[in-house]
Length: 305
Image (cartoon, rainbow, N blue to C red; front, side, top):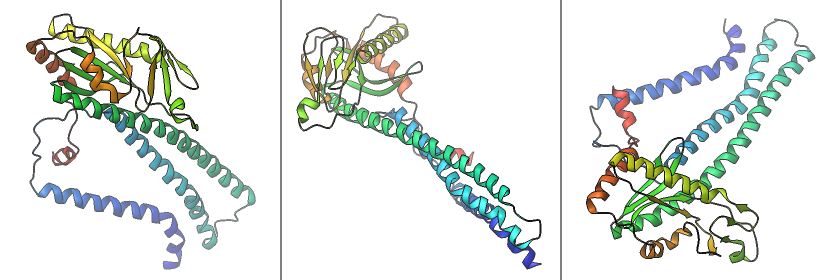
């Protein structure tokens, strides 16, 4: 009896391990349910800089884990499938059988590796973007001392406004663009971007979309807030390029700056005066959309229900 079961152990082992892992997690959840605790948080949290990016990175990390598990699983599963033939006379395993099985597993593994390669590239770009959002967000937060209200990652129609600042001088929609610098011995030259009011001239390419995108999103924000409060207000666009030296060749166009220049920019920028009452109304509308992040620990409460 035992000898007839042994050949099937390698095949059943992954399922046995999976069951015990699931059972262990079930016991942990049951333990926390019995504690009878509830969370101290009564409100959702405000969105952090790069909130949507870090959420996308987490999704990619989960997918990477899945594909990596498949890469490890296919060879083990293939080997386990042929072990019973060594002990049970089910028939001879031919070279064509091995070839077909090996071909199927090879195709599956190549597909998984291809997906892993693509996900790693996407994650690298998202991490760069996230670091840029954090760098800009931290500099903007310094404006809180000057009476500004600062919000991050404002959710809009199929896009996000990276940062919003509201104060006596007006409403500002800040667009962040994190770009890698070319490797060069002339570090400052390689980190300088020229701006003529319409386009950005990076060391190796020209970009006309960044400025236009910032304008469109500021216009969208103006329309949203004006509709919500019943009065016309105009948000102004700003582009932030963390880590870059910005050389302006024309006084025209919206501000494009290194985020370390925010203090000077907001000190000297022309005011579009807002009353305290108007600021409160605008901030109320913005915060309604930005305060939508559930505490991480809220999952415990969901499991109890």
